[in-house]
Length: 447
Ligand code: HEM
Image 1 (cartoon, helix red, strand yellow):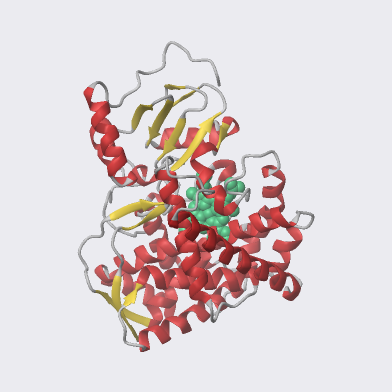
Image 2: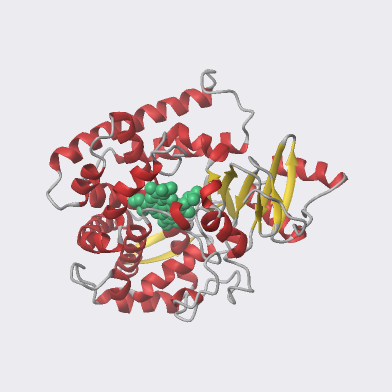
C-alpha cells in the first residue's frame, strides 16, 4: 500500500468542541460502551486524535477483512498488546517478532481440524470431568456464579484435554490469580498512565504475586505434562512441536495456549448460560440432540454429531464475541476502506458491531440460532463474522474451541436445569474480553 491517492475519503469522527467531550467520555465510560455510542453517531468508521496518536475505528466487514487479510502483511499487534505481553510474554498472540511464522507453523498441525477431530474423545472426557464438578456444585444447593463456574470448567478442560493434567484440587488459587492478572492488564491497557510495575503500589504488588502463582503453576504443568504425555496424545504433540524453544519461549507459548484456551471459551459459555433459559425451544433441541451423545472418535466431526449445539455456540459468538475489538498498528501509510491511515496509527476493528449489523445479520441484536443464518455457508462477506479474527493471525484454537464448547453446552443441557436470579437483559462491558457487566448468578439442579 503506501500511496494515498486523491480518491481517499474524508475521515469521519468528532470535530471542534465535540473532541473535548469525547475524551472526557473516553476516560469515564466502559470502552465497549464508548465505541457503541460513537458508532451510533458517526457510523462504521471513526477517526480521532489523542495527542500525537491517530486512532481509527472500523466496524464494517470490508474494513475488518482488509485489516486482517489483505493488509495483514503491514500490520503489527503493537502498543495495544503491550499490557498482555506482561502476562503472556512473546507467545503467539502477542508476538510481533520474526519468529512468529516459525512458531505458528510448528503449532498449526496440532490444531488443524483433522487433528482436533482425533482429540475429540479426550475433549469429551475432559468435559465429562467438568460435568462431575458441576454436579457437586448443583448438589451443594448454593447459588452459582456462572462466570466463575464456566472459568473452572474451561480451565479444567484445557488442562486435561490439551496437557493431560487434571485440576481437581488447589484450582481456586490459580483461577483467582489468572482473573486478577487479566483484570489488572485490562486496567493498565485502558489507563496507560498508571505507575509502572517497578513502583510498589498495592495493585502492582498483587499483580506480581498473581504472576508468581501463575508461573509456579506453569512450571509444574510443563514438567508434569511433558513427563506424563502419551504417544499420539495432544500434550505430546504440543511439546514436540515446541521442541527447541528455550524455557522462556516454552513458558510463553504454553501460557498463551492455556490462557487463550480457557478465558474466551469461559466467556462464551457464560453468555450461553444466560441466554438459554430464555429460549426453552432451543434448549429442548439441544437436549434431544445430546441424549444420543457418545464419545466422539470416529470419522464424524463434532459439528456433524452436534449440529444444534454448534449452531448455538456460533450464535453466542456472533452476538457476544469475547474478543469484541482488536487492534493493530500499520508499519506504513495505507488506505483502509478508502480512508487514509498514517503509519503507526492505532487501528481498532470491531467484530462485535459488524456481527450485529442488520444489513448482514437479519436477527440483529436478538439471540436467534438458526440453520438459516449466513453461518450455514452462505456468509455474504468474510469480514461479517470474525469472532476468531481472520487471515494469517486467525485464532489457532478455533477448532478446539468449537469442539469443546459444542460438547460442553450439549452436556450441560443434557445433565442440568438452571434458572437465573435476574433474567433481565444482560448489560455488557469490555474488560480485556467482552463480559456481562454484573455476575450471572443462578440456581443449578441435576436433571
Ligand atoms: C471462544 C473461543 C475463542 C475465541 C472467541 C478466540 C478468539 C481469538 C481471536 C479473535 C484471536 C485473534 C486475535 C487478534 O488477531 O488480535 C485469537 C488468537 C489466538 N487464539 Fe483464540 N479464541 C478462542 C479460543 C482459543 C483456544 C481454545 C485456543 C487454544 C487452545 C486459542 C489460541 C489462540 C492463539 C494461540 C492465538 C494467536 C494466533 C496467532 O496470532 O498466531 N484460542 N483467538
